[in-house]
Length: 226
Length: 226
DNA sequence: ATAATTAATTCAATCGATTGATTGACACAG
DNA sequence: CTGTGTCAATCAATCGATTGAATTAATTAT
Image (tube, helix red, strand yellow):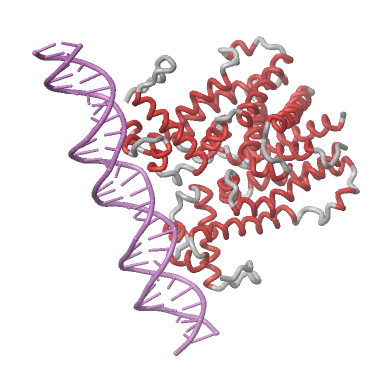
């Protein structure tokens, strides 16, 4: 049971192929129907393999679930974090204006990822199913992705507003930003019905982006004057 | 299978008692574990009755699920609507300042309900499980509760800011407010871990409230100057 | 190289456990 | 008695897991 990722690029061993096929199928099914409601037979069929492959590669349904969480973390990390400076020390030297722009960019990228990327529906649904429970998968997702992201964004916020980096207000503010964006993906049914939209396409996403980022800027400006 | 709510107050027939006990138990279990992961035996035991009572009163597990959604809608309606003016016509005569205060009060009450009320964990978790799917239950919850609330709040927002009541921006803004609050309940695991809190008690709720409402005010003020 | 051997992977078939649903007996109020 | 509601017991169906055979890939021997 090798743990390493893909070797070079195109050439995947047959074993790795079914491994990935299982993770992709499971991620999608767990996301759309939930963990308990998804049967291993269903996953295997969607991945075009046999049920026992799940036990072989992941030890069982639960192991596959954990592997999905790991896979998500690795993808989400590159998707959101790859354009940010390496160390938190680098943030210390940012000006107020640059910190604000960095934060705006962060929220903007989150909007693009959650509302725009084609993997988003599967991924976000998967995470959402986890986020309510204190499962191992959630622990992993938090420690690997959500926690560091919030930490980093809170640092930007404190730099941008001038409030103490340790202030709880900074993290609360940042989480409110994240929460907003999450809602537009999670409660998509509500959003579409309320606005009479057919889908959240590029135009709709742009409108949401403009509106939300405007609120973020207003919030930062207000927090500065204190 | 009577559909009416409780008759007077204290005196419930034995039949109605088990009916309500089943709904309450199911609401809590569906919310915490999800529909598929909750067995009818589990529900019956939690409600201190026999499995077959579920089939007798609700026709089956699915029927009980529908009854839970109906129960939630009826409760949520009274919870939110009884403190608001009757007609939307009444909003038309509000001043900007009064509209802003009404909106602030609306968000504040939502924070208290979602983060404070003791039924909230069950209810909110239940709704959240539904919100991802376009189930009949969700349709009902939206039409009976969420839709009207957003409609009303968007009206307040447009009055408070002076933008057109039909503008999509108003609804997007309002939904972002709702989304923020939802997040603090839904992603409680993340919130607690990020802030190093043990729980979201009265003090924590107050801090969240102060921070979020401050952002709402800042957003309204910024939207006005355009 | 080619054949022989071993390891890795997938398969159909089956396991016991649990699921939602149903049954007929039973209790009790009107 | 009669009808409403609850009970233990049981139903077929489906669950996740496991098995040993079959297949494929990798390694070694000739």
